[in-house]
Length: 193
Image (cartoon, rainbow, N blue to C red):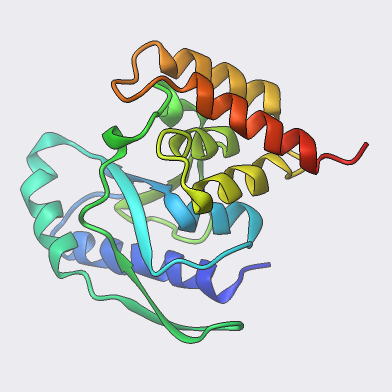
């Protein structure tokens, strides 16, 4: 079942796809990988976000056109059941290189349903890849997001840990080991005995 926020996410990318189609961009030319609060929401329906964090993969000749369209992409209005009238906008400041990310995250991602024959294929990275992307900063919201994601029945702590340890080999930020250990303690505290 789609939530109003899920519908808003899909509408934002549908609007992007329509604009690209008007410019003769063929179906499937652009892949958008969703991260941040929107990705957490798509998996767990647990929280809202006002912006969409997305990493794009596209043919190099499309770069300037895509950036121009994204800069002018209007926000999507929707009615959040808890917050009331809300808006969802694309976040142009999102940069996936600031946090840890497994080099194969695109291979682990799955396409979202809902936008057919669009120039934009909306991809949702795996639960474990989304959780990993939040491990570097590990603020309160990041920790809660990671714990929420890893509590889902289809999530795997072992897979998350494996991806984190592999990504730690090339992540340029601080050592991930203390953050991983902290998440493990909190994860174990929440697990039913």
